[in-house]
Image 1 (cartoon, rainbow, N blue to C red):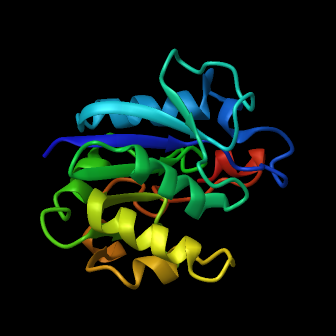
Image 2 (cartoon, rainbow, N blue to C red; image 1 turned 180 degrees about the vertical axis):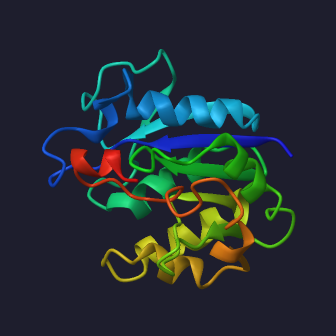
Image 3 (cartoon, rainbow, N blue to C red; image 1 turned 180 degrees about the horizontal axis):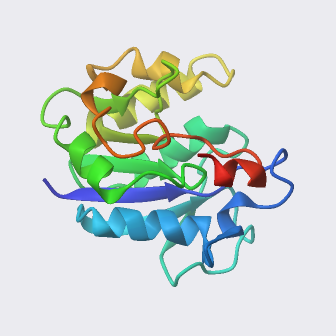
Length: 196
């Protein structure tokens, strides 16, 4: 399965205090780290950064960068931008503030993306994590566009995913991974990068 992968780097990072995407963890920017993880997972196609707007970042790791086609919609706008840009049957998205995701976990998640419209993992706390997920490009593109133009409000990612044929990957289905509880930890402050 050939997959276009997108690293989401356009968040406002208000709680973090600086742009998460360019924060250095072990000498590597979080954006670059996420791209390398996706590379190592051998998804088979291009890896592109999705920023909120032109000029938000200079080139990162010399990779292609695109910008939100609907500004001000946050994460759902970034996923929609990825889906609009993708040329493969499946689209993988990964937010750069999920720095503990591993290539092996991505490969495991990919194994659930053989049917339906999406494969979305569940964190240890029971919350879905749609910013490390596989989306079948065409039906998801249509679903996201419909939701974004429905009534002018910003819908939740979960509300859109609930309209799709989604394979929910429970924590129990990957709990055997080393550091499984940490894999989908969303980092909102620098201190959370040292989570044990």
